[in-house]
Length: 155
Length: 328
Ligand code: FES
Image (cartoon, rainbow over all chains, first blue to last red; front, side, top):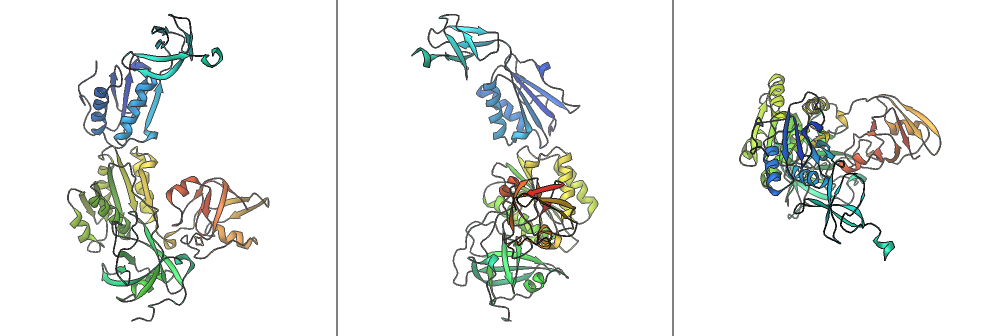
């Protein structure tokens, strides 16, 4: 449950803002070396959560650092929002969460498969096609897109 | 007084440039004059990026000065020149210029540009360092951007103070003038921890001043990409640290002592390096760097070219690493 916009962030914050998405656990975020830290958690990078992130960032001051943890698509969207606010690449740390179960959507049989292995491929539970897990994350389905891994060879 | 009106010979550093006429000379302080130049036939001059400098020929020499305008479609170029007692004579000659005199100038060159992604600009100037900073402030005002300025100058001896004050408004939102070190320390410390997150910092002044400002900013968590500084011409350059150069083709290693330039060291070793101004302005003495990070002190290379670290101006630049390898 996302906190209210900017709530709890002292004005002029210059510490580390840690944002986690999805199932990412706040405790998985690195230690901030004694720097003041402000945690935010969102289910995913929606227009709403990104605008909240932007409002938090615009209340902060130069010197602030941002750590983004979670599914690659979410943290990439958040990094883009941070860049809009004037944060520089070197001030943002991305911790893409590649481990843990992911949902993979099969475009062939429309089944969603749970991938526990964190590999690049998974066997579709619906049609047994070997799916390559694409970077594309569908927010509507809450799943990564799979595509037939050996389509070229099969054809 | 038109004795120095038209220089006998065009210096290569200003070749292909413009011939301008002095249209106004005004005294800013006891030691600083502002000189305004325009095309003799009138009309637009080439636009320039805020923070650019202009290479001007005086007699047979050349010198670079910061332009103080915003650079947007200018009909005149203005520079301010500090009289340096024992300088190479350039500043004295510039102080002798009169309305109607003709001078050769190169096209403006940018090496201290505002960051395009900045959401706010923190401008810090000391003394004559106000010149490029004033250019940035004017540009912020004209381009609907915002800036805060901190200006350190001697009591009653600040150049362009009135112009800076006139810029105050929605563009230049704050101007803090400091006339003593103590107050500056406090003002700077406060400014460094209160800037909105997209702010970039620009500092111009004596080298020690700039180093102190940049170091303090880094200490407050400013990343290097937010920090921009503009050093003055050769008069301000210190002796530097000694370093070694390895000439890759000839396999020779040479020591460059403090106070001796790389160019001089190479010449003493029998290498002939093309050169002209010998103060980091003309670009003639460029050398290809294969390994190591040069300490760039020239006014010729752009910020991007400097960051690439694959070329350097041997007349003024030195090394941040103990050894540099050159393609010579
Ligand atoms: S000789 Fe002109 S830049 Fe070095």
